[in-house]
Image (tube, rainbow, N blue to C red):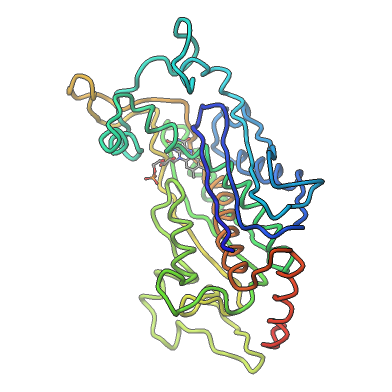
Length: 355
Ligand SMILES: Cc1cc2nc3c(=O)[nH]c(=O)nc-3n(C[C@H](O)[C@H](O)[C@H](O)COP(=O)(O)O)c2cc1C
């Protein structure tokens, strides 16, 4: 059965929800490990005070008993603690009483670089908030929770996934500079997956190529504008003799320019995926826009926002890569019970004589 993930939830609505289907039964989950990843997502240099308001915690509504998956859909919830200030503005039903709290006035000033203009045009909204509430990266919280579950599954076959910021010191200097100028910045993150056996993904069909699936998973994260695998774009400027990883008699490599993927298939080396994040679009010194109500030139919406969220992206990208690798591993090894999954993995690595 294929692992599937569906999410729902607005940024200031009551809660964020994820439903994970296809997980094998008997997988041990650790609430503290999931909450620790949720906390990592909220931290980082350049984040706004909103991150202190939330203190995300996972709740499980279904699919788990005494810390073990049941093989049934796993339903995860992360509540938006800040919703208490938006109960009128983000009420799912027509609100009762006088407008109070936040989100009571329609937003009509779309921000360049955000979902605002495309969102209202596409869905026919009059209030930009109807688009931005879901487009916002707030719901990456439940993707991170799902990623923590994926990492637990990958852990049973000795795969580890870790995201980090590339060139963190230089980024901090740029964040300080941006903050002093009331501006925003982006940056680059890297996700490494160790212990991935050769043979996840395939070259047989384009849609099943693991390089494409990982690229789509990471590109699908808010604010990501570039993805590369291994040496990526730099490979375009090298000779072939400098670009490919020679094969030793033990079938490993001394270099890893390919980032662990050849022909859309894992080759047994570390998988390395990098993502470029654009500067966050909500600016304290707003760019030119249009007032959608009057049609007059105006400045874009100003809202409390982060200066940078690159460290958070490292955690979100780690979760996205973990989810996709867990899906690919489960497609290959299968199993309704986690023991079947691990047993199939063990038989396979024995057959190919892999480490
Ligand atoms: C972890 C994370 C946090 C973000 N925080 C903000 C933010 O505080 N303010 C903002 O304007 N954009 C933020 N973004 C980026 C926007 O969500 C994103 O630019 C917007 O949804 C438009 O999508 P696109 O950039 O993929 O085109 C964040 C993105 C991520 C991944």
